[in-house]
Length: 402
Image 1 (tube, rainbow, N blue to C red):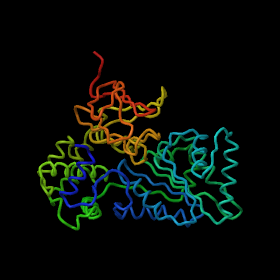
Image 2: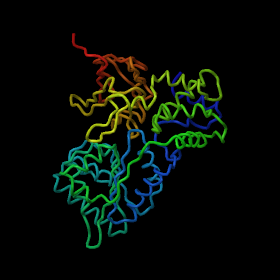
Image 3: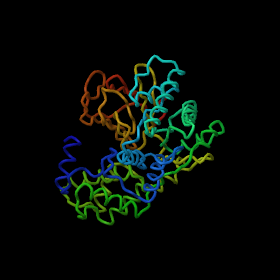
Image 4: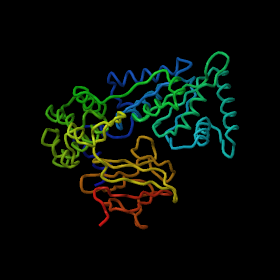
């Protein structure tokens, strides 16, 4: 049974119109906690402040991308928008990507030509009464050279005011980077900063109930109070972890033909995911913040993926227990911008013993040694082909040397 078929079936069982805990960023599912509402207000301030420059940070899965999608849905018509989410770029590539967002084809041009074209465009938009907004998601991956280019762009102005508004969104490392002495001038340009914390216990309960209502529950009790309490204990209030656990719990209930999720069903889901209590994860030596204030990881990495385009290493991603979703759009854990990669192409489920890759009904599939695979338990060194890209799996659970 495929993942989409299972979701449709459990929606019928629970009387829902659609799956309530998908990982894709859908603005209608945005839960407006106090901190999310404040972060959205900060982003909105870039529209009515001529020197708007806002930085939003949050842990992986804290809801940044969904918040951005919701904000973009409400933009007024006089805003000219550029959104960049592929951030491992050189300064020239970044300028090219920005101009492409504005409708240009700025290839085979020198950097000075790119800057001149961009400045002329910004001034022209201003003269037409337009407000130009740049939104960069996954900004923690920007190099310091690219961040310096952003600082210079933020300084472009007419005689009256600046002509480019900027929102940078990323993981907590972005704040550490901006605070480095080399980027002091950029940091001074930032008007507002906000960090999205994890949800509280009450907010976690409200978040789950909100998503169920949006999906069509009509206030029917689907998660028992004891199950809701355990969701918080095992997710720590991280929205993406809440979605993973609740979706798995609904599938477990569906498998047993149960119409409610109680503590026993939730424990089955926790066992399937092989998660431990969230506080225990933070208490482990891997979870202690270091002297630089780096936020804790849930586990030491059990394995990692190496993403290649041809023979060039593009990115590495450490795998921890749970699901890692791979696809073309920025809401994925690993984004691969390629016409051969589906929006949500595949997922890797990692537990303490194994990592298993599964095709999510993609158009072009997954290939291992020229054979198309639907579901496959990975071994150290396995190479999975996705169109022009390939994933090399590295097992870190043991030292492979004799």
